[in-house]
Every structure is written in structure tokens, then in C-alpha cells.
Length: 81
Length: 275
Image 1 (cartoon, each protein chain N blue to C red):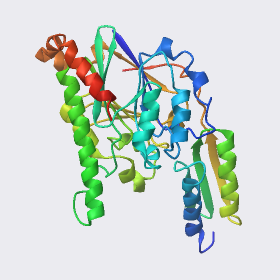
Image 2: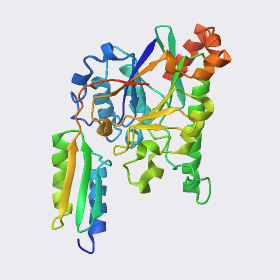
Image 3: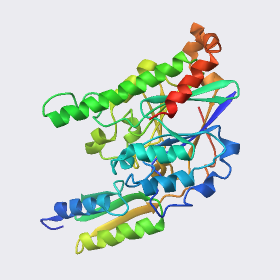
Image 4: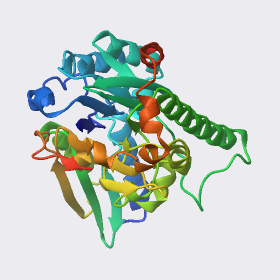
């Protein structure tokens, strides 16, 4: 963590929102001495784009990644209501 | 009789997104009677992205009914996005209703994007700076539109009514999101409208890290179908006649609804297609 970590987190979030993915669903949060990037994205390509942005914007910080690719398979079953 | 409803939101298709969802829709006609889209169909709300969505969801064997989400408004051309979808048979609702005939059951969909403002006890009110008042008024107006659309469906004798929104009507389905952003994810005004006018199910998206299941204080089941949350092509709900609102049968409205005129239904269908 550095003095400007919170501002760098917001710069990353701004970049993700205004970039090619318009990604607002990924969470970027300072926790202890680390920054955690978590959520689910549409495909592996999206994940790579995000990881590149994370590497550039949070260079030098301790970053933990928990970024899943959400499958889009048919549902296995219906919910009976 | 069982009504089978498929629903998904937040598919966020970009210009390179063709083919990402379509393969999983191959059996949709065998599994569902209608397909609901809970907004954020595009990434930036551009015409090019809308065409990708329209092509991806064109010519499905069941009626497709949508609301737009905040991403679909980002390009500041939501009417054009809706028009492009309409060209491929996808009906977009904003404070409007649509009716789908499923066998002998008339299924009504009331749709609005909805808006933020937060939830009871901590909600935004029409007070202070003009910008904040405008936000609060807009949220209230869209909730009023949802109530009016649900009332239309009741008047038309729909045996099943679904409230379709992008923003959430309840905090239940936001659990998992940071509490600080709840006011940006939904509004209690939507739940108030749903409870006042009545619905059998409420479906929304928007909260990628939320929870799938919730309920309004009036007992209407709420489901968050944001694709990054449900992690499947769509969620599938079966509503049987016995699960439909019991108070209607008790008051005799079930008999009344069978007498609703076809012309009234046709008018509503037409109004649902307008934007």
C-alpha cells in the first residue's frame, strides 16, 4: 500500500468503466496491505483486458486477483415457483 | 398449467460479442414460453452494439421482451437501441406493458428500466439541489410507470403478471454488493409499485455481485437474473396456476379475467410495442 493507493484504485475503476469493456461490475478494493480485484466477466478476452489494466494502474502494489469467467451454458433446471 | 419464463440481464454484448449467447439458446423453444431481458444488453449503448444484440437474439421461437439498462443509455440514444431491437422482433418496454398468450393463460409483462435512489430508511428524497431532486423525481416517475403498466395488465385480465426491471426493487437481491452502492442499484419505489399493483414475479438485473432470490414486503418473489451472477445463459422459472395469486381466485377476479375482450388485449400489445 502507498499513500496514493485509493486514488490509483479509482483511476483503475474509471479506466475500466470508460474503456472498451465499459466494465462497472468488477470490484477493486483495498483490503489490509493488498488490493483485491474480484468479480465475474463474460469471457477470457475480457479477463485479459482487465488484468492488463490492473497490471499497469496498480504496478508495484500487492494485488490479489479473484476474477472468474462466467459460463453461459443452458440452465440445468428450472426453479419451480 | 405451467408458464415457463426464461430471463437474463446484463449480457453486455460488445461489437465482437456475436455468438456468445446464441448457442445456448438452441433449445429455448422447448424449455420456455417467453424470454425476458432485464437490461444492459449492450456495453456502451451504441447502434453497432444494438445490432449485435438484435442479431444474436433474432428469430427465437418464443416472444422476447426487454427493458433497457443503464449501459444501454450510455450512448444517449436509447430510442435508437430499442428501434434496432424492434426490427428483429424484440419488444422493449419503458413504463409499458405487453401481453403474451400462452395456451389459455394471458401472461402480462410490465417493464421499466427503473432507477436508483436506495431503500426504505435510507432512500433519496426530492430535496436539495436541483440535480438530486431530478434524480429522485425520475426514479419516482419510472416506478409510477411500472405501477400503471401492472394496473393495465390487471384490467386486461392477465392470469400472470411479471414486473421486469433493470434496477432492483429490493435490497435482498443486492446482498453481496458493497452496501455503499445500494442507492445506485435500486429503489424501494419499484417494490412499492409492485406491491400496490400486484405481480406474481419480479425480475431484474444490474447487480452482478448480488444474490438471486429476494421478496418484497408484500410477498412478491424477486429474482436477480444478471448473467455474471447466475452464470448461465438464462434463468428458468416455472409458475404453475396454483402458485398464481390466490387472492384473485378468492375475489372472483379469475372468472372476470376470462371475459376481458380480445380488442383490449390487442390494444395493450400495440401500446407495449410503442416507444
